[in-house]
Amino acid sequence: MTGRQSDRRLPRQAASSTLIVLAGLLCLAGATRLGMGVAAALAAGDNNIHADATAPEAPAADPADLFMTLRAREVRLEQAESRLAQREEELEQARAEIAAQMRALAEAEQRLLDTLSLTESAAEDDIARLIAVYEHMKPRQAAQMFSQMDVTFAAGFFARLRPDFAGAVMEEFDPGTAYAISAVLAGRNAAAPTR
Image (cartoon, rainbow, N blue to C red; front, side):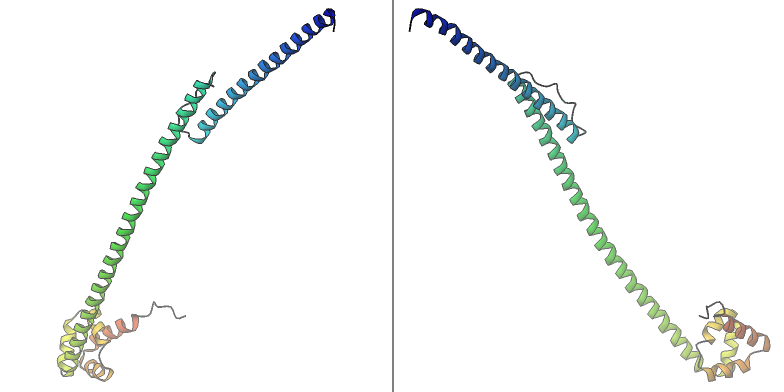
C-alpha cells in the first residue's frame, strides 16, 4: 500500500466510526423515550386500577425517577391491598355475627312455637274438661248456665257437646235463646268457601 491509499482509508474509517456512534446515540435516545412512555403508561394504569389513588406523577426523565415512580405505585398498591384485606375480614366477621343471630332467632322461634303449642294444648285440655263437666250436669242446669253466657261464647261450647246432650239442653232453652245459639252455630261457617 502506498501512503496515498492509506490516507484515503483513514477518513473512511473515521466516518464509519462516527456513523456507528451516531446510530448508538439515536438508539439510546429511542430507548430513553420508550422508557418514559412505559412510565407514563404505568402511571395511567395505576390511576385506572385504583380510583382512590392519587393522580399519576409526571413521567420520570431518568431511571432513578422511574424507579421512585414504580416504588410509589407499589406502595399504593400494597396499601390498597391491605385495606381490601381488612374490609374482607370485617365482612367475614359481620357474616359470622349474622349467622349467630340467625341461629339464636331460630332457637327463639322454636321455643315460642313450643310455648304456643303447650299453651294451646293446655287451653284445649281445659275446654275439654269444662265440656265434660257440662255433659255430666242435668240438661236443665246446663241450660241455665248457657243462658247466662254471651250467645257467641255459649255457642262455642254448645258446638262441642255430644249431640244427644246438646239436644236435651236445647229443649230446656226458651225459644229466643235456642234461636240465637242456633243462628250463631249455623252462621259460623257461612263465609267459608264452598269449593
